[in-house]
Length: 290
Image 1 (cartoon, rainbow, N blue to C red):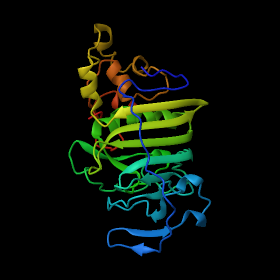
Image 2 (image 1 turned 90 degrees about the vertical axis):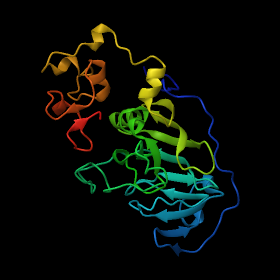
Image 3 (image 1 turned 90 degrees about the horizontal axis):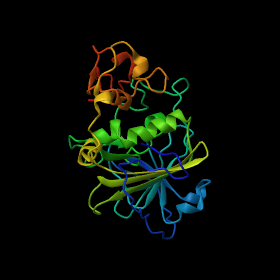
């Protein structure tokens, strides 16, 4: 159960301190272009860049670039449109930090959003995303105004990304209408991998500083190991068919995967199930919670 205090952490989180790339002198470079990735380089002095750019080369990468390649010790704006979200890599080209003064939600009435609620049809092919259990996971989601290039994508466990702590955090931010002072710190087990081992998110939501920490693992496996998947007879009984109020615990007319599970329903919920119209099928494949 999430507890709202000055600092919050999800139950699956593990306390880890995340280190940032070491600071060096600023780098001035000239524009370059590669076959797989068009990049324009500049220096922080050419923009209204904050002091924390010291030691990082400021470059521009198209938000929909799918190459999956990253350069070392660079900073990239990964905010869609007029948003400014800064992403930093370390000396190994690993994405280690993403910050934003303010998270501004996607506006599908004024922005070019496709039928799936995304700015781009696909995400960057960062090494590791080819594994079947890993998604091309946004650090800052489309719905929160993030782009889809390699500086905002990490290989993330599919369950964690779609239904676990990552998805829950994104829902919390959307429901709050955005947050401020956002920072993501990303940890890796070795310098040679681009698959994170741990995430830490810090942000201010409705005046409260929230800290979410979780490993890049399947939360269902963690819950099972902790004995948290057992349900009492009362919660294991499905609600009466058609009575959505017994499942929609917050009364907002929308049933989340967690609400359905708490009511005793087994995932996935398919299109022919009576609960399906009340749930969100993000990939529009006729199943929720697969």
